[in-house]
Length: 458
Image (cartoon, rainbow, N blue to C red):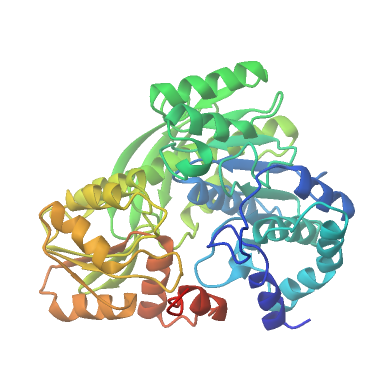
């Protein structure tokens, strides 16, 4: 099977990361189907030392840090994350590198008979995320990795990744997101995220609001788990920060570190605290990582479109802040990084997000102008709708047909010292990155079909 055929097959499946492709289709969230699929594949998810991370904000950065540290320590490490920026292959990485096209296609071809058997056996249609999860586990077993670092896709308790038997679990910052699935209170969302906690497995947790922390604490008590709190048991102290990264001191129960990371924003120090706590927790299971590997792994970690500098003059920064919680943290980071500088926002969001909440948090940056746009994704909100939301908060707003057009307009109109922030969703940040760095994206024709207006009379 060729890579293009593999992508075509994936995009033809029911996919709950985008609008339903089958009339009447709706998501079924449980572990029965992924469990049955993995059983047919001889349970490749088991028998590998595993770190499992859930959260609303920062789980991707945290998993990337953990994997980078393990790689620096000499372990062959598999990393499974979502969504991707430029290619599906980014979701399955070994040694920090996306798997090659031929390997990805081979996994689709190998697993496809099991996918079809699932439907014939009455388990229903396998989703794209379930297939990718199974592909990652199969890939990691075939590669013989020493450890696997797994990011939860949605929630935790019923997420397809929640079939692993981890050596350590992480819960990053929690906020309101995917409320239509996870619940509309922070306690309900915390309950879903805490569903990854397993009996006797140490848990490392970011600072949380009291109602969320209470849920996590009770889950740990019920499962007789040790709870390591970032901000209490693992503490950090900033030293310096520039557009090239930040330096800080980190104290854990085991050591004191002086660390440098290329990722920007104080929240990344919090994520690093969780990552180091997780790595240190692995020592109980026999994976003992030294100081040098932790320092080196964090120094060379890569995680794109999270306060990423795409251009210096004018300064263009991209960040996938897709909900109010993320937008608030982004605004806080921007005020610290570029205080007092004239700011233009290039923003696009998905329809199922809290558009008003994102607009409110970002408008607090007092942008000189907002260019509302949309990504290629069919779930993108109309730019005119987004522009009206920003206008409600007093921001001068207009629309642009594409992310590339919006970025070009902003750059053309920028004066010396101006800052352009591209945000609102990872899809928008990714398209800005492609445009700025000359990256050839994967294009999915089905998106064009789904985004097209329905014929009249329908």
